[in-house]
Length: 67
Ligand code: SF4
Image 1 (cartoon, rainbow, N blue to C red):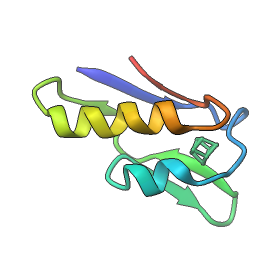
Image 2: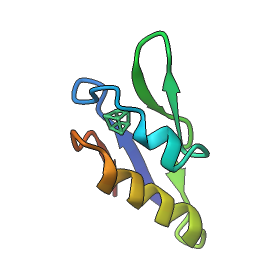
Image 3: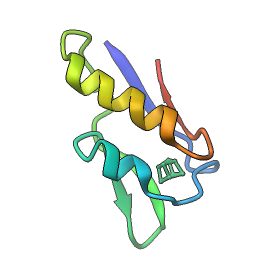
Image 4: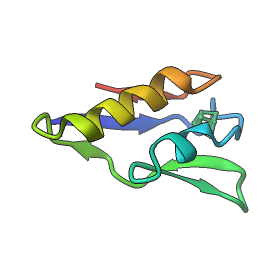
């Protein structure tokens, strides 16, 4: 099981994560930050894991971690 975290102190509100992986992240229009909507991803779900990793790599401020 992989854990997805997003540090909202580091997030700068670019919104990439919610576009890259909308099943894992959402963008809060009021707070102007990304949020995790799916905190755990099963290792047997390679597509979801790949999307989470892509969002992690694409986040401009490195606020996302997938461990
Ligand atoms: S991609 Fe990074 S900076 Fe942009 S909303 Fe998501 S967590 Fe925040």
